[in-house]
Length: 378
Image (cartoon, rainbow, N blue to C red; front, side, top):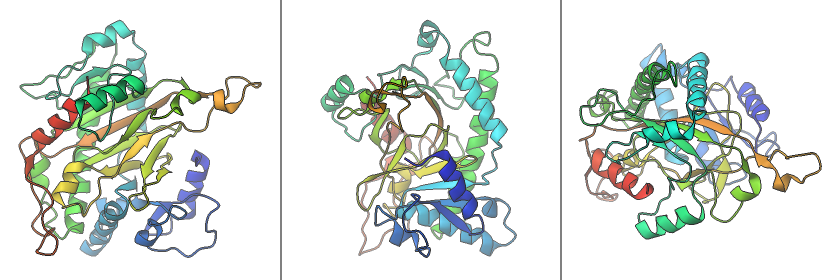
């Protein structure tokens, strides 16, 4: 697994390029930079592009904006994942969300359980360890068996748009979690604003008007997920089928993922089907395309499988083998970006032709996401 220090060195060594990428250290030293399409087709050269999004946010010309948009779309075409640098969300803001999240998960279980997730149409509230089993399967019996054998070892808090007239967020009492609600509502809006900018870059990269998606995502039908992966014996995570979060794709347009320094995220190389590490790079956001964006683009943009597994083990004591060590606690924040609730997701006009027919029937955002959530939770 690549450590944080190696990731930082990779970032520093390539800051002079328009876009950079994360490579596995020690491989292909001195090799000339190939195209992403060439590199992604081999596990030995697989990379997730690292893109300076500041070039889009403060572009001095349309050509500069278009160049960054092309990099974003190319990353989603070849890998389905990108790292965004200079994205505009200050580190202090992210740290505050982490702090408030940690304080929430430290609350007694009896307090958190009063805020329990209840309905896939709402997708709000606290999800205890073992309740969710993310998977690509849609078979209820199969998912139940997977959950029984190897549940996801994480707890989460799900937060939606707070002004929804039908579904309400499950907020803790202010006395139990001071500043939690205010922090999360501000961060929700901050992430939506970034989502809008990234979708504008995607529109340009696909040859559409820059604001094409604006009126299709403005309702903020999103989900802010706080995740806490408690410490666990590494040997348990390495059992067959077990993971902190099983292999899955995400459901919406994009996911903005903020990682701590622990690591464990792995991305499936779409070309070889092998999982590759996506280690944390300080100051960046991992962004991946979701199922509805893939459907919109007729799979030109990839919704790639990913999972969370055991990073290098921390020995319990000096006399014990690492294989029986403890995988340390991991925190992450995922902002699942979605189209509007009733948006009709059908193939974009420039993503199909007679030689490349439409792959999917139209579906609304709500139909697709509620269907996936209904199968995921017990």
